[in-house]
Amino acid sequence: MNRIRDLYRDKTIIIIGNASSLIGKGKGRIIESYDIIVRLNKGWPKYPEDLGIRTDAWSFSCSCLCDKFCHELADTPIKLFLNPRLYSPNIPKDFIQNDMESYREFIKQLGYRRPSTGCITIDFFSRHIPYKSLSIIGFDFFKSGTWYGGKGPHQGGLEEAYIRKIPEIEIL
Image 1: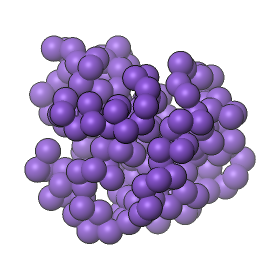
Image 2 (image 1 turned 180 degrees about the vertical axis):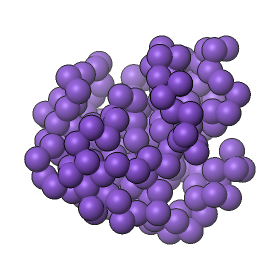
Image 3 (image 1 turned 45 degrees about the vertical axis):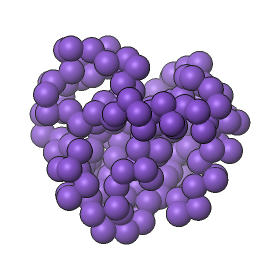
């Protein structure tokens, strides 16, 4: 955990959600202007003009995705597995993991037990990283689904309310 704190201290960070509403918006240059770009699950930068291309960190909360895509992440400097409830011994040692105590506190504050990877990642960064600024883009809280076709069992309304209570986050 100290490694990511030291690397990301005083940096501008953007977490890119996978909402399909981001496609066609031409936000790639804005995304690329940040010091640190964090992507989630299957959110490969498939549309550079909309999603940018660089990836500084990748966040997973499902070990099956981690297992499936680990080989494609070899060049990604920081890899995160942030759902300790779904921990697997197959997760490589170089992945940074969330601690159970912080995760339980987050779940208690959120008010339900199945948060999305995006919500877990936003909470992790707001709780543990001494950033200069934290922005999020591509989060419409499941109103449009993901651009790669997933929806999941998540409660967008609760996640949106939780995230909007974090005063230092800029929602683009």
